[in-house]
Length: 405
RNA sequence: GUGGGUGUAGCUCAGUCGGUUAGAGCAUCAGGUUGUGGUUCUGAGGGUCGUGGGUUCGAUCCCCAUCACCCACCCCA
Image 1 (tube, rainbow, N blue to C red):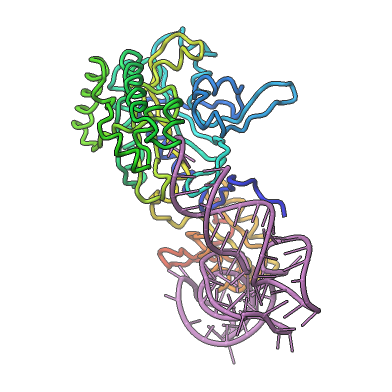
Image 2 (cartoon, rainbow, N blue to C red):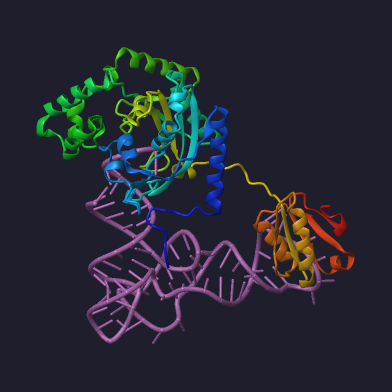
């Protein structure tokens, strides 16, 4: 038997209902906030992700589905959505056009990781990117949108908030932190040694208790923000307060992708295991110029659909459409004609085997149909169809000529 | 990539200290006298016991490998 690749799942009917419900709900909300759909390719030039996500990150360093295609191009399956959208933004010269551009997208992302609950090799994200808005109100808008989507889906969460600073304060802080870590000497673990070089802020949330004991007095980024970043961060907190969105400041929150600056946020759930981040995002004002565009402020977020799936509270399913069956093999032909008429305006599912009425009622039940319509000997003789409303429990005999005219 | 666990019917799981026809519940299908479901009773079908090797007279059970899933690390959505 040929199986799907490791960490790559099929999404079958029941799950797909949730999936589709999520997409519809999230898309509706994104549109209400003034965002437009954008579709970008699943395959992109590898250089795009190396430049945007950053070579030091794990996702570029070891998790990309990268290969040389038949035209000798170094390509890879997208590991995240932002880079492609920014590439499209620059390629279509929207940076030069100026103004505000707001996009949302959803689709598959690929990361060659060891699969685990809430972590797949092919997974789906819903994301949003906003270009051209410098104001921290747009950062707040992002958070409010995620909160709206999660609320609509009945999902509880905790919101973690941090500011990563900008090019004025971040490099200085980074240096300060690195020298602090170096002052700890050999007392820190191997992971921290590595992080010190790749992503120093990560050392702060090292799980190693010995490391943690050394870090209690480490400098915190939140205390080293420049005036601009500090005032934006304060404004953001005020806006969230005004909109009654609860948050906790997490000074160790670091987005894993290199392009983030200033606002960083993460929505986490305590009900889905260790892969608890259900949405993450932040500001990335430098990314457009990294990708050869005209400097343009930008913010965005992405939601992990699979991680959300089991948390979604679905609306109660309602019976809909028709189930049609024959109790006599001669009745199958008229049943099919009826189905054709119904399908012009409603859903119709036909059973092709002649069966007992009881069997048909069960069949109608199983597919959650509103009506069970049956033709048997009696109906054949009278040229009628017997229809039972499975909700109201009423039944009627309808002349075939009057049925769905 | 590291460490640990699991893999028996469509689903959830028993079981065999290695021995002949591998079980249950749910689901499916069929019946319970003439055509009424989601809530009854009876019966039936359905498994090369993840896959490939090895040990053995004999393996679903023991050993090795492999694949997949689960949990944690790591990373992140």
